[in-house]
Length: 277
Image (cartoon, rainbow, N blue to C red; front, side, top):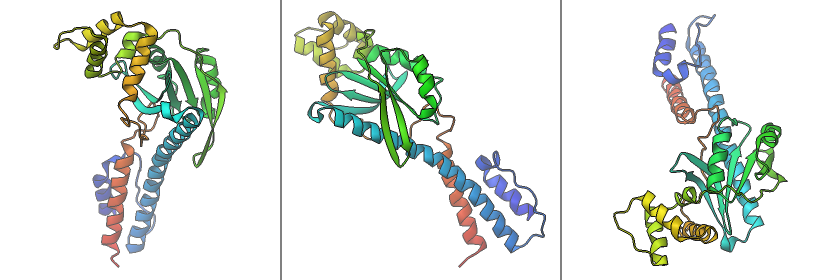
């Protein structure tokens, strides 16, 4: 029994750090071996369920948010983009609604923390015309206290299987938008297209930074924002699907999910070996 347990510990290094197997008080035997397998399977299954519940929770929040946004806006003039990189990918916006404005939505479920929110706020303020924080009930009070007044706030209510959204306050216009940061949302070919449409000449070897500077000098604020929205909409279904698992600032590591699944599969295979049908 001891050698078998030791072997299982050696073959399951990822689980071994969190599960301590001790010698049983009863004599070794087939029944004891089977009980031990069942106990380990139960622990691993709980790990898988716990990590998986977060995955489902995030997907449900995103789905509810998408449905809410599409019901509130003209779908002919609206696209929703997920995980949009800001400031050359330094920050990612969870959900972006693009219609007559660039609207950013940051999601903080109850399993997340607010540790990175300050940095995310600054990035959102540079890139979006309106910003909204979507939070679980755990974060509502703290969000009210720390969010700038121009930020909207939506509280997530209900269970994972029945998510509802409560709009606590609507977002106001952001007056600190940075046109250079907004233009960083575009690809190089899109920047070139803006200048070509304006009849402005430029060197084909121009750097992205140089193209951005030229675009800023040639467009007024309102026109530039409109052109950026048009370019993003023209991408069609680019990055518009639901994100399966959010690697945000949750305390749970996303890498645990595939490892737990792999370990659980191994344990099930051992059951088949020890107890063939």
